[in-house]
Picture 1 (cartoon, rainbow, N blue to C red):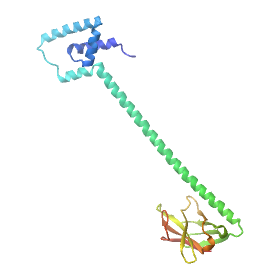
Picture 2: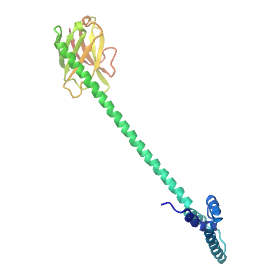
Picture 3: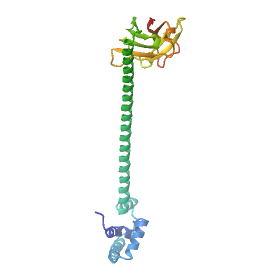
Picture 4: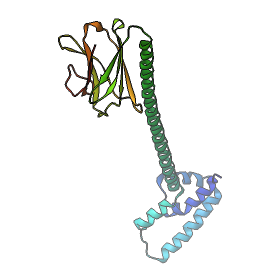
Length: 245
């Protein structure tokens, strides 16, 4: 419940009589005293009492500590302190709320990125499986076996469609800064990149579709090597496999 303004004026009369009231509150109380007989009477009584006390002992100026203590007890000082505390609490609440919102946004972004990666992997896997089924049903598809020290698998090849699917089992694990790169081998031995791939996570095999923009009948084989992430302009790493058409 808000306090009666008249009560606040009465509380300040003692400090006013001692000259310990700040300038703003002193001016406000002086204006009030002009219209309030009861407060003037209390001020007169307190001044008479304080004058008697002052006559009883040698006059002494109040110490700085006493003046400071009196000022802290004034209503204006309590209001300022309460306002500062309220502002500090509001700032803290806003900071906590902002931090919580920021963490929630970061968590949501990470979840969305993870979902997008999973969605892309599923889309690629579905495309590979559909292409493999289509080639298996195509009468001119060649089936080439892959046998090497590093991996086993199959190549489904439709030269007249410029399409192939490579199915590899038990791919060796690779580092995060590495990738596998597919190469089309020309009759003169030149290599042309046909794409990059990494082992399918949580899958015993990896299928890689190839949709060549070049005529596959102009090549004599294909293979794959281990390359730095992003691929290379020509084979530089360990050969994974090689098959001839």
